[in-house]
Amino acid sequence: MLAVDTNVLVRLLARDDAKQAAAADAAIAKGAWVSQLVLAEAVWVLDAVYERTPRQLMAALDLLLAHETLVLQDADVVAAALAQFRAKPALGFSDCLVIEIARKAGHLPLATFDKALARVAGAQRL
Picture 1: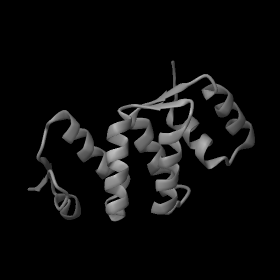
Picture 2 (picture 1 turned 180 degrees about the horizontal axis):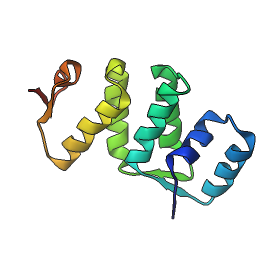
Picture 3 (picture 1 turned 90 degrees about the vertical axis):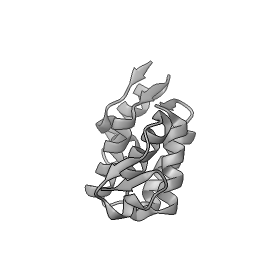
Picture 4 (picture 1 turned 90 degrees about the horizontal axis):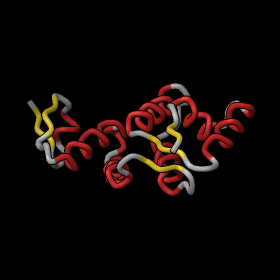
């Protein structure tokens, strides 16, 4: 199965370049895999560069989780991170993803200096 890079995923979501969006659509038509790293980078780009709101980021993640031809790495972890992000959008999706990856791997607590992240179950402030 084809794996996609961050820029392909951003084109699929942002739709800001018609030629690249069409190429991305064609590339994933038969199925494509999205790593957690690519997903986190894409969400960061949508937030930092495209200035999407947390609600818009959540909608994009919902779209990706339900997409008929995209397979997200550990979709259960992504869904749990999205639930955490919905509950605490100020954390940012990447922090939510980090803790959910650690949780699934059985490596808690997650040590952090981040005060907000430390309040999430499974995290521990240093």
